[in-house]
Amino acid sequence: MLVLIGAGWSAHDLDMALCVVMEESEGFAAAHLSNEQEDSRGLFQLNVRVWGNGEWPGAANRPIPPLDAEAAFDPLYNARYALEVYEKWGWEPWTTSEACARVARDGPATVWTHLFEAQFAW
Image 1 (cartoon, rainbow, N blue to C red):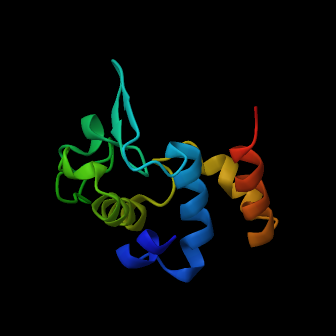
Image 2 (cartoon, one colour):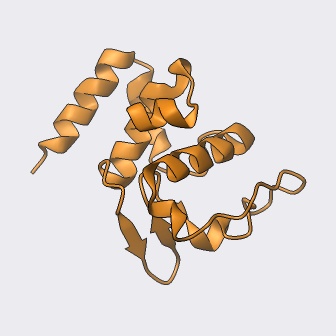
């Protein structure tokens, strides 16, 4: 949570951002998913194959700086870059955000319950 605050996430978006982090990486900064479709890294699982050029497919005229693949494992860099992505494209780049949005509609307490249950799901 402190990393998200330090990266500049607003209080309004903290619960949703934390939920996405937990869904994407379980809060593990060194999380890495690498296969034919993606090379996703860090807390927000930023995909180097997508963000390496700084553009979300089909979103012209809204470029951001290219993702630094190695720095993507740094929690603060990852959270700051994710914030830039969010400010341009909202939650759409994270498929896990759909589940988080459903939970968030019921309020912050439900988000925290969801995160707690996800940690102990077998």
